[in-house]
Image (cartoon, rainbow, N blue to C red; front, side):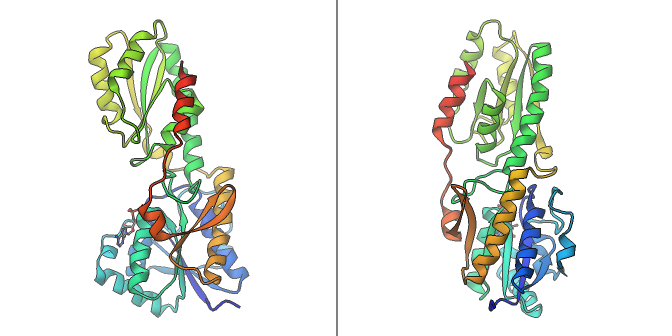
Amino acid sequence: MSVIKKLAVLTSGGDAPGMNAAIRAVVRAAIFRGIEVVGIRRGYQGMIEHDFLPLQSKDVSNIIQRGGTILCTARSKDFKTVEGRRKAFRNLEKEKIDACVVIGGDGSFNGAAVFSEEHDIPFVGIPGTIDNDLFGTDYTIGYDTALNTIVEAVDRIRDTASSHERLFFIEVMGRGAGFLALHSGIATGAEAILLPEVDNDEEHLHQYLINQGNKKSNIILVAEGNNVGGAQAIADRCKKELKDYDIRVNVLGHIQRGGSPSAFDRFLASRLGVASVEALIDNQRSIMVGFVNHDIVHVPFNKTIHSSKNLNHILLDVADILAH
Ligand code: ADP
């Protein structure tokens, strides 16, 4: 039997499809190992405000396919203060909680690392963010679903773009990370992709569009955090130079966060959820469970927080070769 008798699970930071599948996996893996489970609502803010609910196996029935998070999520300013974290710890003590699983991004892991340095409670993190920008895991929960949502949306826009011979700038999410833009750009045959990780040369883009002759239907994917401004700003500048083009802008926005998780995200969330409970039973703490080469890995919080995950630059060449 594990020394952990009671475990808390929370979702924190930005929501991502597949978080519910991860909650379900944590709850059922813990119960399977004889551990009681409590859900904390609204992330760290709920930990401070004692917004807890006991979770049984049946409470996580019928959620594997649901987007969002049944526990709700939040960004908590109070948790960034010593006093806020002290309150949160007192609540965990009151509930006799021995360990926590936090499902979120690097901000949430940073919070967990700070908290468990101040207070003696083990934390394991599960990577949940549509951006896929966490070091130490090939994939994060929610990324595959968001990617598929983008591809479906861009395909639809492509139909109208080619019918009207229009040039569309489509902005996708990815706080400073171009994984969604690059992969969806390749998957939709985008004519150009503007990413935060590369020095985007707008002059080069203009020249490319000027030189391409009769081809008037184009899709340019723009990652929201790129260095030349958002899709609207780039489109406004292009309109001045490229008078022959009928230019439109589409910011995909929050549709990228919602929806039923893909099969891959459900699978990933299920594996990581079980792995998080097993890691805690094995006395691991302050680590993220990740997925590398289709296998589970354990990555110290400090490593995932302080390292950045790089784009595969070969994919930039692939996108470029196939766009011509
Ligand atoms: P994500 O987990 O999606 O990256 P955020 O960056 O918003 O989302 O982080 C989620 C929450 O984690 C924050 O609202 C805050 O409560 C907590 N957090 C982030 N950084 C710290 C920190 N340095 N100290 C304490 N708590 C933090």
